[in-house]
Length: 499
Image (cartoon, rainbow, N blue to C red; front, side):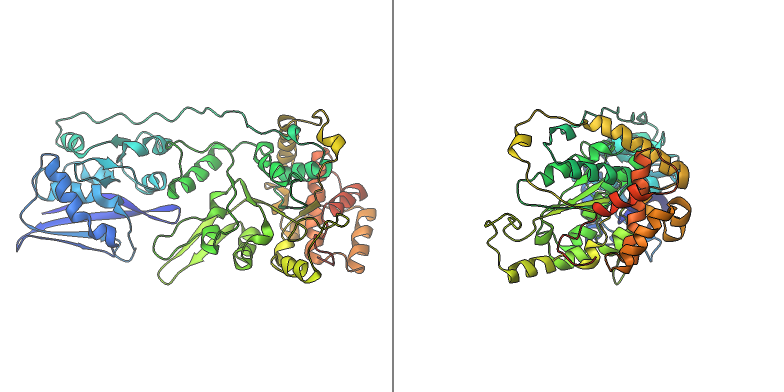
């Protein structure tokens, strides 16, 4: 007898539908799984058998063959346990076949029949097309975003009763209540740093990458942590997208959807794979994708492995990561605002009279750890100095994060209305249309290029930043000398020379 049921497997941050076919036939009793299963799926026999017996069922003394289709797709994880179990019960006539064609099941089984949560519950449930999708109760809050087809269960015995018509199907889980607590950090808490605050505002409004260079204790980390609070809240579609990634990474808090923009700050010992994603057996999103639609903060940039940093260059340009292995290729989303902070030299005191203890060779070696092409990806590069005693002990002044966030939201609305994307994402051919220059501004840029102070890529980035400066001021006209000069002043070369 043959039974079919829908399930899904996780590849990267996306679920892929899988048809689980279970055939109960003659011959010596046995259990075989085909269709490119990994080790955890091949071990499902013992989990399924113990779970069925613990839930009041019987293990059939027949030859069982389980096929996972499509056969060319590699399947991984214990997420198929529940679908295999239902197939075995149906093929052995312990539950009726009626209704299985409109049912999907996702979940890992314990030996006692408990249905355990799985990583990636949201993308897995989203991958199937069924009237009822059985999921673990622990995955209920995240999968509730998909609609009324979700049916959460905590143990196999209750599910068997429902499949036999002897129990009542549980109601779909209620979507979690949105309770966003106010940010715990505020821009007004930072003393001084007027230029850095301005750069932070521009980065939030236009989606520009920001590099801060300065000595220890200048406030670089404090500034970076306040950037998510300046950016507009996630839209419903963005929230679903970010939640999907967090679910695939197994990082949802209490299974609730993500409503705040992510802020990821990996340690400088992070490897290339941990930053960009991938892996030898289980392909998982890296920190770059975990920060999608939010902020990726790299503190102590000069201490990261150069190979890991250079692995970020292409994803920053294309807003996605393409990981290719021998048997599969996966694309991860990676639309982030990159904020980096580093010291001007290994000891951090370069520029202070008599304070720097680094030799020229040490400083040169330290600077070479961050390649020129990577530095060129930063639209904004500012020097951050320690606040003066007067600033440090003064009463907090300047606008709060909420006031700046309102200005940022207005500027982003102008950009989205005008071109449909943030200013940092404007393609080069569209600059003449959306970031046109007046005569004075064009003359200034031409002179900078002629003197070798600006590259062709740098001109485009200057124009994008200048467009954001104009949007913050409410100016929709051509870019003038003021906007261009301000954008150029916020693009210093941290190591000297031409970038």
